[in-house]
Amino acid sequence: MSSFGDSLFSDRFGFQAPDAEITVREDAPDVVRDAVLMLGYDSGIGPDSMRDIVCGVLLRRPDPNNWSQGNVENEVQYLINDAPWYKIYDLAERIYAKMLGNYNYSGKDEEFARRLNGVFREHGIGWKMEGGRIVARGSEVFEIATKDAVSTMTASGAPTAANEIHEALKDISRRPQPDVSGAIQHGMAALECVARQYDATTDTLGPIIGRLNLPKPMDDAIRKLWGFTSERGRHLLEGRDPQFEEGELVVTVAAAVSVYLLREKARSGR
Image 1: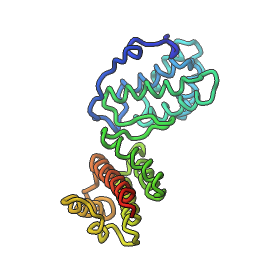
Image 2: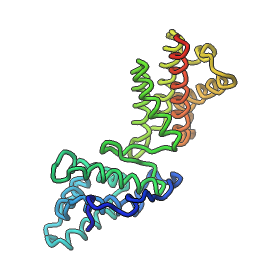
Image 3: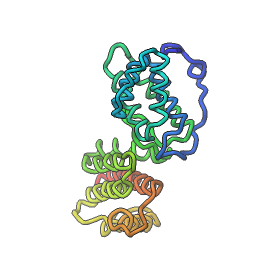
């Protein structure tokens, strides 16, 4: 087997497949199952240790009749092939955790995450590994907006708003079922916190929107988004559960507008 210490051709010359459109969320196709297993082996985790990890995640007893390396590898492959999709992502986290802080795997934890994320991007998987945790991966604009929002809110003295965005990301990353309604609520709560700070008021977002000095017709768009949030995030109607893409849209817009307001506040000295 190769090792992470070897410099691969594609890494040396910077070749990589373009990011595929995200099409997979509630599934772990064979390409993901194979990647998690092979990257674990490539990190130096042997078949016996891998079986211990897999059985620990799936709460299965190792087969005492399998003791040779080939039979153990076959058992591990069977367990992974048969596992529920979300357990595969649990397994990826557990493999990372085994390597983290262990000098025998020095640097291999981050390389495991880097290469696994490459598989996710190449095959349109809507997840990514950050700090050893599997979290939802959105569109490129979603990734930029939310990352920028948290850092800007924190630097601007708006920790409550930053926490709301953090909670929105946690909700939309829940397994096996994302809490899209929760993500929508937290995303707009972040915007409401920023709007209150901008306007120096305790009003709810609805009355504040007209005082935010937003370029028209952005103010109308935010009013409609606020109404959408009320319908899909707080007062749900039977059979009208929000979709992941709708939650991603609301959180993206809320984060982007929050950053705009905080920067505008800093520029104007409000």
